[in-house]
Image (cartoon, rainbow, N blue to C red; front, side, top):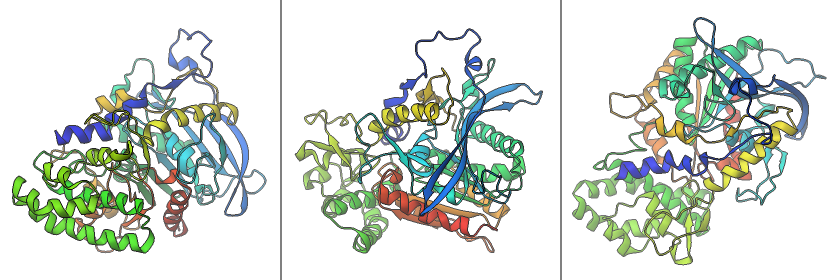
Length: 502
């Protein structure tokens, strides 16, 4: 039951908005030659943005890059949007300027979240709390764009965005841990070769499953493609699925999730900054110490020992905690924390509340106020942006989220029985001892709790002569960059690895 719940939360939640797709001209008949006939030529446009008080000129390019099989035939067309700084009257920068490939997660998500939410030169306008404004959506310049640090390439894996398998090929052939890494590794190799960037420092950034993807690519690019990344940024990553889809009798995940619930309660009471860190440090010690010991003593015994403290930590009613033997699923916490006020919390950011559609029911609240609201907002904004500002027009339906990819993803197998990339990350670091690794989580993320990252990193042996992993926790949730302060903090953390390039 627990594994099923977490699967629904992380993966099948994509289905909520996955059917939403926009064609650029719904009135035109579908051409008979299939999707490939709808692919326009790449479009380049010139723009400028003010970042850090300085005006930065840049070239935007939106297009498809064909992937090729061994016999030279096209297997898929990958949609991307690249941004290249042109600071000297449109001339090309030296090849040593960094280039960062950016991915979202799902699996089955296009890169519009990080593109129009956090890193790109244009972002969707939002309130201070990160909530999008009422439609029609408005795009504004991003004062915290990463473009002043690195050129950017936002990539949509096959089956997401406008990316499609070529005629005669199945999208399912690209939907798997290894298949995905192979196709995106090919994309990176081809992009660098075709744009003359093979001598540039290469960086990768990914969110959620995109963080999993980036950690794997850090190894496969070196071993299979001959490309050595200089640094990677993992944002709210799902690194080991043993902690995302735990076994019914696994106890560790209860301890790992507890501090995130504590963060939600503390922030709701106005606790921030250093005081928040101190309170959470106490909760973390309890969660990984006495709490785990209590749970290990048995279901009823552990519940009796821990219920009072867990109720205090989470702010939930004591009788509710006792009925659940001090083991509180994040979905239950999100449903119950604000039930008395007729509200439910977002699993993607527990500091955000929304209406509970069925306050008398024990089932889910129905609409996640962060995730579900983001789907139509980002879909509409992205389709308008690429057509009106980047001149990329197509009748292909834009897939922000693809539920078929989520449902049919091949996670393969591992020695632990769960997909995981910590061993891949260690191997990537051993292959390139100077590889910079930054992992960023949000305090109030109930999807990928911040303590999971800290726990996993602490289980890795120190590699002599290898740059250590940096793990940071920022205000906000899974998409902390939706908030102005979270977006600025994310850039500040990431900026260190670019400053040290070369």
